Length: 338
Image (cartoon, rainbow, N blue to C red; front, side, top):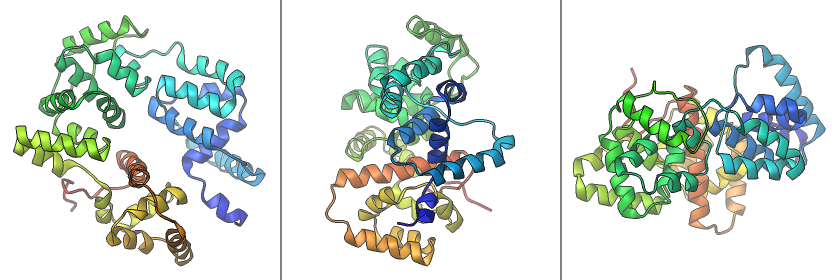
């Protein structure tokens, strides 16, 4: 494999990981403190997966960083327990200890925001015995991917109740959010922030459903349909699944492909229909397309769960890029473009 091909595979997150691993512990900690939970998770995961980084790659990253540093404003973040394990794996227990403490201690976050730094199972345990409406508010407040994982730790009946309540939420009175923050802040230190009062709704429920495992998603959608067929149709129309990538414009696919590793792409396409495959091949160079076809043909039988995980990883990247305004997702419920 040529050096140029190796360097071309570096995503923005990979570059951020290389940069942080190249910095000293103190400087890296200062950078990470400015990131949010989801961003720390993405960068930390990339750090943990770094193997045999070439000198040329480090020089490439440093050179690009120097060029754009004047325009750089922020990076990104993830979950407390997960971050600890992730950075310990990446940096070793001794080196990671001080770094983790600098990142996680002393944050000025509200009780609700503190939940965004926790593992999904821990969040589920925190709200497990709360009133269902409190559970729904918390789930609606979390980012959809974390909310989906939290829901996976409840039984089917509770999941259904929470999603139905999230769907019917529109606004929450600031006083109610303040009271919930105070309850949570008995467990987590931080300051009260009650400015966010709008959350929930059908779109939020659909976003959360997107991150559930396919088996759970199907079961839950059937149950919602039994309770409220119109609501299930609304949620279904707003969900974005892997097959919907065929509706993304060519420029969007090209931008997306630059952020997806070849291994993940091959695994995801093993279970994709011909329309999606052709969409991908169409937006690659002839040489890259040939290499991808060869990799697909050489790939033996794979587990369905591995294919689904790869597709969900690509969808996570696509949704993140859509939120940042880098691409437009053409889902069934998408807004018409003029």
